[in-house]
Structure formats: structure tokens, C-alpha cells
Length: 449
Picture 1 (tube, rainbow, N blue to C red):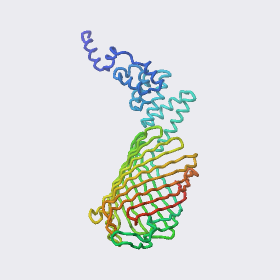
Picture 2 (spheres, rainbow, N blue to C red):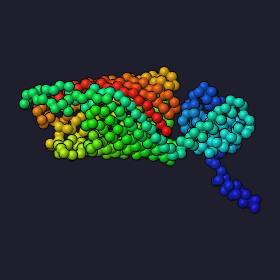
Picture 3 (cartoon, one colour):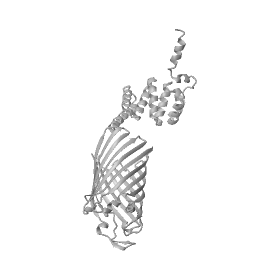
Picture 4 (cartoon, helix red, strand yellow):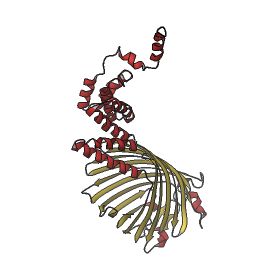
């Protein structure tokens, strides 16, 4: 038996961690330096220092595991933090073990392991921690309940209605006579001139969210809009729009990919349908700064009705948008730029309906208090069509549109908002028929239930 002892010792050593042997030739973990960096708030440097010797030091000293886990958690590496803090919790003792449990519970929360986080937080509470620690734990427990609620399917209805006045409901010229290069002056039908009317606009919306996890969900939205001009029915609009989207991401990056379909009726008759795909990305840079990118592709089709020329308006639309938002205390600045291309389905007879356009928009919101938020918006758009206009005008149409809006949101109750706004739009074109200006103002309410 004595002759076998060396072989048994050798065999058993094969199952021991290699780090135990390597550690004999390694310096001790830099606990003092890691602690100094953490105290100074330089968690990234402490994490990098510990990571450099992780294969030698992990599991050797509970203090190293704790410091490395804390540095990893604060540096944005929650999975590394979980592994290190689990070791520190298993091997630590006394006060250090309780602190390791607390930080491990926080790491579980960040990685969305809500049951494990709740269990550990409750264990720490049972050991009667100081009052400030108890308050922090209770806050985390409330966040856990909120996050669980957010992972349950939700359905919301919204109704919004406004009443207003519009001095140009059809975005038409105010001129009765138009000069043309081919036939001279032509007289416009009154229906093709600027028309003023009062109106109501009502939107009924439904939103359903089915979450798979806190960071992944399916979203469904349906909106029905009815615009009723009080005196002129021919420009009344009904718009039914539905979207289905898959959303995913975290606190830093959010992505959304979806499909959208819509149908528009004009004066009660089918006018336009569309189908499309869209994707978007939003990133949070911290300190109230966000940027976004989105793209969509849509097939827009017009009903023939009694006018076969309507089919020549069918286009395929590609739209790209980039945005930047900065929240600075009560002030929110948002800027967007976009580029669009509408290619005609009919590459010959309908070519003049194809167009390229780009634009920019800016909005400013100022939150006076919890209830009142005035805002301003301004936008510019430039459009160039693909070919010369085939009727009367021997030129390629080009338009420039400017729009300015001022308004107010009043959050009267948690579910009830009162709105008011006024908008001025001016469109100039190299074809006089398409010159127009428009001013409208409206006020209304929005209720969510």
C-alpha cells in the first residue's frame, strides 16, 4: 500500500485546479490597489487590474472575488460580477459575506434573474441591516415588482379628439388663373382652389404588448383616424393603420423590426392602401443624450375608382431617418433629418409621380412643471420629381415646404391630457399650380384607459 501512495497522490492531483499550483509562483492579488481604485470611483481600472490575473486569483481569496465582482458590476459586466460574487458569498464570512450577498442580489437584478435577486435581498433584510441599506433594498424590491408587471401582457386603449379651423384643407393654390407655357392661362375649378373649413379629428388607438422577457417583446398597434370637415365632405378622410413589431435590446440599445399596413378612404370611398417593412435603432449615451436611426420600405397603391389615371400614382417608397435628442433638465431638444425616394410603379407614363425628397425638423419642449409643457416645432422639406409634368407644364416639378408649430400639453390627470396647437405651412413650387400656404389651429383632449 505504501508503494501505491505516490501514485495515488499523483492521480488525485490531476483533479485539483491548475490555479492552485500556478498560484505558488504568482504574487498575491493586488487587493489594496483594487480597493483604492474602487474608493476613487475608477471601477473600470479596478476591473482591468483584476481581469489581468483572474485565472490565477479567482477562488483563492474571497476579498479578491468581492472586489473584482463589485468592479465588474459597476463597469457594466454584470455576468462577470455574478460569477465572482457567487464565489465571494460562498467562501466569505461575517460582514464581508453580507456585503457580497447584497452586491450579488444587485447583479442578479441587473441580469434580470429576479427570483434570485428577491431571495437574496430578503435574506439580507432578515439580518437587520442599517436603515439606509434597508431603504435601498426595499426600493429594489419595488423595482422587481414593477419589472415583473412589465413582463406581463398589457393592453391599452386611447381616444383623442380635436376641434379646429383650417384655411386650406386641400393644400391648394388660392389663384383662380394659372399661367402655363403650353396653352397660356387656364381657369381652375373651384374644387381645385384653396378651401377653408372647420373640422374635427378623432383617433381611436389600441396597443398590445406581449413580453417574452424584460428586453424582448411583440408589439401590436391599431389606429383609426376620422377627419371630418364640417362643410366640405369631399376631403373627409378615414385612415386605418395597423403595425406588428418585434422589439429587443437593453437600457443602452433598443431595436425594433416590424410590418405596417394602412387603408385610406376619401369621402367614404377607398382611396389608397399601403404595405411596408420598417426597422429602427435607438441608443442611449447617458446624461440625457439619445440618437436613433430608422428605415422603411412601403408599397403605396391608389384605387382606380372612376379615374384610371390614379394607377399612375402607385409608388414604392424608401425612407431613411436619423434623429438626435438631448434632455437637459426641463428642456428637451430633438432634431431629425430624413431622405426619401418614391419610385413609380409605372416607369413610363407615371414617371412624373416619382420623386426624391429630403428634410430636417427640430422640436423644443419645455417642461414648466409636472402638468404643463409648451413646445415649438419647425421643419423644412425639399422635393424634386423624376420627370416633367405631362399636363400643361413642360418642366420638372420642384417644391420647398416650410412648417412652424407652437403648442401646449397640459397633463390634467394621470390619464387625461389637454392639447392645443397652431401650425403655419408655406409651400413654394416652380409650377404655380402647387404654390400654397396653410394655417390651422386646434384644441382637444387625449384619454388613455
